[in-house]
Length: 133
Image (cartoon, rainbow, N blue to C red; front, side, top):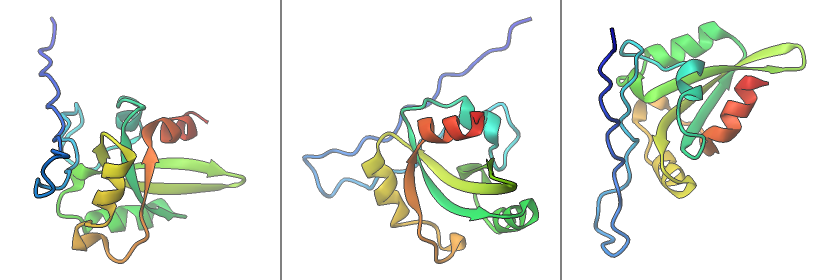
């Protein structure tokens, strides 16, 4: 039996000739995962040419989960583990964007629920390399 796969929606495109066009928004992507925070497998399944906004790194999974539990739209977030020396870090990222510029712009207008952070744009290719070790 084969599963029907719906096509991925197209990303929002900003009109460079019209500065009044709306700011870029994260690309809405369907996932086989239940609604909620995305994981490493989801990040690995995305195109390495996309970008995301890295929000915060936690030293414990419980703290990462606590932060994510306060978010109104958990499907916009993903988390992955990174091993650094003898420590496991839990990294939270937000959104998917077509370019670094769009990710940087979105980082300046994050939902208030994320708090006062210093986010930055990261390529999915870089994140995927980190996940793979």
